[in-house]
Length: 293
Image (cartoon, rainbow, N blue to C red; front, side, top):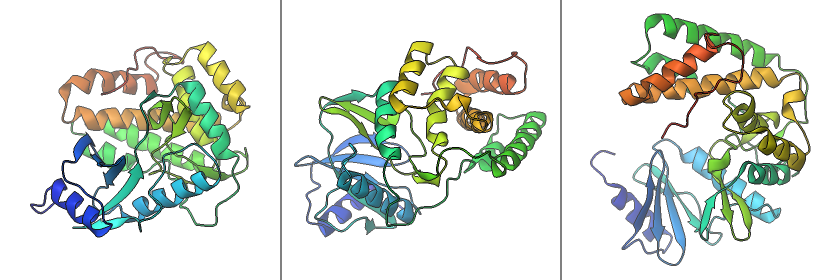
């Protein structure tokens, strides 16, 4: 940030829209930085170069609120996003006390989300392979043979995705629809994090949960059946399911490779995931896939 602190960015952006940022509390520091401001406001500082993504999130959240979908709400009386020292900053109403949603909660909000008509603003096409090549190239923990195999697998899946069978009507998709992006409040589940919202096959959103059942066994059959009943569709019965499942599994494995490059404790988990993809642990499901902190 060229010597600038997040506090300086936050103070500058807040001042431009007439908000106080003194005594701001850190909520989370990650790819995006979240701060709690006075009067129930949350400020979100995006990574550098993410101005378009921040603007998209505001448009999507406003569209969802206008259509009655339970989602995090942006402040409507300020112009957003706000640019400050090369970072895009957005302002949101803080959620009430909440816990992480269940798989059933994910199904509930996705059912409502996918039922909406196409918005009047444009969205990018779904990019299921975003950053995968870079993750493979930059994973220092990856031996050359494994790197070559993963690159080849990526190429195969890119070709398969280009020839994806017909499925549900293409529409706006969340892009990262898992339990961590659904908050369960006293009033019900609330959807958040619209950074990957795009236009594409809605099956992509459903596969996030399906992989937890068919691949990793992080979700049991009872939870999966409830998910399908609530949403009204079982994505595993679609002809294109295996392609999207394989892409999601590769994404999960390259993420582990990336983290293992700087955190050796993750190396065994990465090695296990890769061995599964390479057929060394038989057919799915593959026990032993654990969440990565």
